Image (cartoon, rainbow, N blue to C red):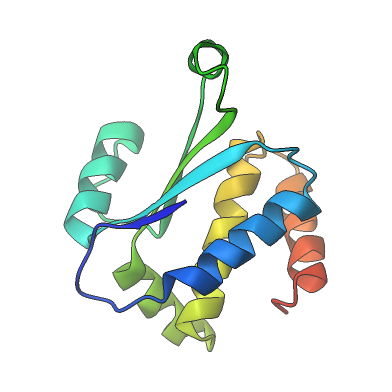
Amino acid sequence: MILNRQKRVRVALPPLEKFARQVRRELRLDGREVAICLVSDAEMARLNKTYRGKQDPTDVLSFPASEEVASRRASSKSLGDIAIAPMVARRNAKRYGRTLPDELRILILHGVLHLMGYDHERDSGQMERRERLLRRRLGLE
């Protein structure tokens, strides 16, 4: 499920929802759900400050579901939530020579990998290698 809670950047949700399903299949998440919310730069900056202690908005943040929360929701197996800032994504897409839809797909993939426990800030390149492989498989490079 993708919620659009920002108004500055026009985003076509059906293709992103289709891609999110494709990512879940590719990663064999077996019915685990991911909620994705598109937020404004101001909201992303607030989230980034609250959860990471950083002032500026970032492109994507992931919030894994705790086992306790997941077990209380017997009918819904939630992997977690992802927040994406389309304004930041649009700036990054321009900088990297990509389209906005491709940049948003990359951020969905990146966010899901974080929900699965990958952490590029602490690992020895495992997340980056996995993401590169998946980008090729999913037609993003």
